[in-house]
Length: 227
Image 1 (spheres, rainbow, N blue to C red):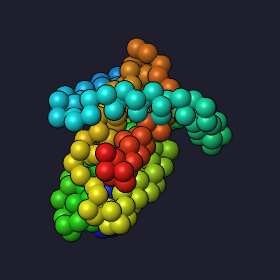
Image 2 (image 1 turned 60 degrees about the vertical axis):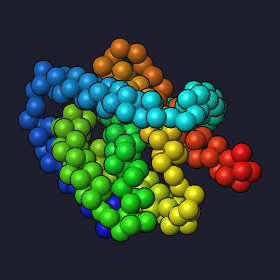
Image 3 (image 1 turned 180 degrees about the horizontal axis):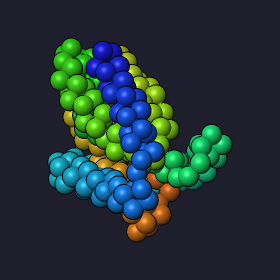
């Protein structure tokens, strides 16, 4: 878990540094940073799709995942509940920034493959590299949205810790095909988050978040019934 702890620490430290910068940033600079973050999110989302979609062995799975996950998320109304919770303790648009941060930090190749490599091979290279990248990203996010971005570090710790434990328990069942499908769905969610930040199209990204759980469930069914 050393790599995950390092990754989490970098996000928290970066958020503290970024929040200090925020106090001296004028509105026009704040706006350009918002645009930059929106473009970054869109770029990362598109990159995930371009890299992983061509190698998908189940090209319809991401469509089913988004449809089923979106319906479930809408039924639970995750986005509304999340916004109410965040706005209770903060002002401004922290909810949007925090949801973007969670997606950027958690739904990426390094953040998913890192805990798997650490659990199965004892290799922390991915997690250490991811920690450095997340640290820099959290500085920019916190300078835009505030210190509340640090809360995404806690979510990341739970996320990567869960993947680490699952990888140990299911050593022979985790394969690249599953990680590929999860990354495709995650890329679409990150892209949607970028569209929201830029004001192009307001997407209920958090209501789509359960989509991430659909590929693992499908692969588990395939594994159990040898389909």
